[in-house]
Image 1: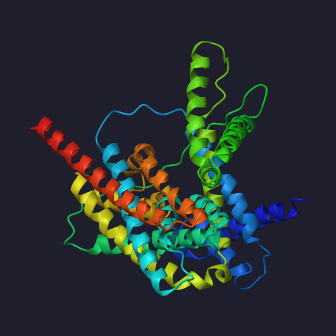
Image 2 (image 1 turned 90 degrees about the horizontal axis):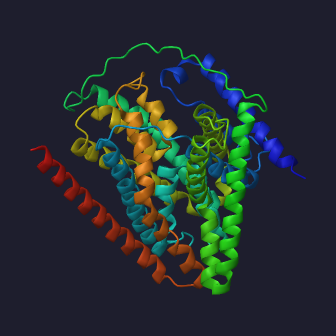
Image 3 (image 1 turned 30 degrees about the horizontal axis):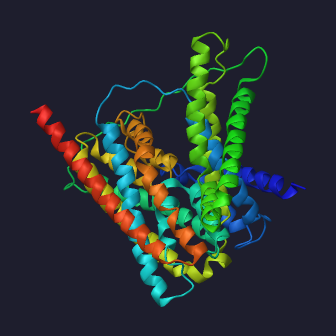
Length: 450
């Protein structure tokens, strides 16, 4: 039945308990603010089938759980009522920082994997395109897209996606801590000083309704939206199947982007629900930002731990060194670009924004937040808002990038390597377009300010 899924969920939760215990017993883990989810994941990697084989974790089952949690997490965040924010240019800059970093990671990763494939036929030519997914988007999307590519012919695509995401977490945590300490000690860096204040306790309100538990209601709405995603994608696949091989390939790719459709449908659902509440059709305002955030928080924490635990060395053995060098060089390139572009676009709190965006664009928003707390424990720098609202802007600018990522698997299915070239050229053209648009936008702003 589903015993393996249940067992794996329990094992990952046990790993979280072990991570909490280790942090209490070993001060170094508290000192450097390493997230519990990452500690739990690396314990899973050690205790699982890869090394000690104490926990009988199943990588395929964990991959399936990660796939579904990816959509649930994005739906939960997208169902939240958007907060009104005073217009400034930081969100636009942040969104463009995020998307241009994806593009640079994608172009670099593609170039390295393509060149490597010329010498080693075991390396898939466009494997490096998973770099911005594993680094910038996290394990859920890296596995989701890698798994869809695997179904179309890329060997061990899901495992490679998880391995790249795990390497990203390594950069975001170990690399991030080293980089942060170097930046703090380097007097030549013109970063501002941020006063460290003690953290304050937060009083949390308990949300209950007369007819149902508040958390249960949030899951009901998430379930409704996720079911709508399946109906929508199922219908689209039936229509695309009539187009032959191309339509079938595109339909398979669309399932890899199920979380994007989930986010879009959730935003539409939230707007309809708000209108219904305003007109008195929906009497109770059931959707609650706090509870939805808690669902998303649990989901993304679980995904991080599960994704690291699910990395299988045996499946990536043939591509290990290519993955290692691509992710190692990719981490260095990401830091160089992020530190440069933040200096050019952010006038205030450059250290906080640099370390936050680096943690975000090699791991997830949660790892970016963890690094940020080292220099801005009370979150006064504005960097959290830049990452969150910038991610909203990045969704808009990221759609062409997602469309380009649908070309390689179609080329793989049809045996047409020209699709790889079209993808690379498309990335270059879109990068030039975005940087040109950003330059003109900045120039116009300066003219208005003068």
